[in-house]
Amino acid sequence: MSRIRILVVDDSPLIREIIIKILEKDPEFFVVGQAENGSEAIRLTQNFRPDLIIMDLYMPVMDGFQAIEKIMAYHPTPILVATSALAREGKTISFRALELGALEVIDKPTLSPGPELTPKEIEFTTLVKMLSRVKVVSHVRGKLKRSPLEPAVQEYRAADQFKIVAVAASTGGPKALLHILRGLPENLPAPIVVVQHISEGFASGLAGWLNHEAKLKVKEGAKGEELKAGTMYIAPTGFHMVVNSSRRIAFNSGPPIMSHRPSGTILLKSVADSFGPRTIGVILSGMGSDGAEGILEIKIRGGKTIAQAESDCVVFGMPKAAIELGAVDKVLPLDLIAAEIIRILGEI
Image (tube, rainbow, N blue to C red; front, side, top):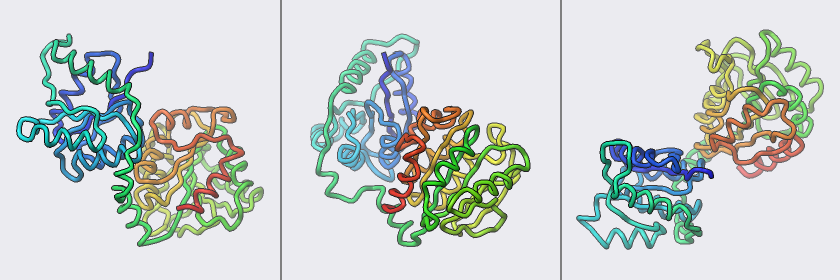
């Protein structure tokens, strides 16, 4: 039987630790993440799709009331409120939280020593199990207000309409890249930056081969080069390639990540940091898990993410790792990835 996936949200690290330790006494639970404010809770709910959220109400940045309202509007999930404010405010906060979509409001649990659950802890874990099975629905009220993620999106768009596609690939990647390139027009309104794990010195040869076969221009990335729409830039071997907010390529000679330099994760994280919701992240065939944390960062920043389907991967390792992290919006066969990139670029 699959375990119950829990997200724990509280601004106190001690309280989060207490709740997690109680849950860890029962093998039916799996804590998928923890957040210290409502804004983080919304992003992690979107990314990890927990079965239940245990959430405090009074937190910095965004409180629990706002977070409940937005989660129930856009990502309906069972929510159990655990707060120390009941003694002070009682029914007032309970009814407000329940009106916004929470299922139950309780005092924060306390942890007893020892590995066995106490009667009070069993009462808590039983409630968590029961609420995790409740089928919740969207609450329209939250959709009438601007999404908490919108200010960041608007900030990027107000400054610049630049869009970018970032790709990580390894074993089986060159063939997958060619397949995708053949489906993209030469006037694609975005550059594509790529980390392809390949033997030392072969990146320029890969770029030349792809350039000959595709409509888009394909070249090896160069230090300080300004990115241009309709061009694919392949990271050279021996350095980590990054992209900065001025749309230029930079390199660093930091240590290999998971034995790879260039690293897909480093490239994808740099793109997420610089361009946020105007980014499309793509994970293609490859061994290991490079790129998974990078594409998760793209998703957290509001970008769109795609993974190659197992059915036509040479090695499913990298896409699988990204999918298991909850970092992928769509899992697609190669035949559909180019069309999906074009579709998303038309929307962002």
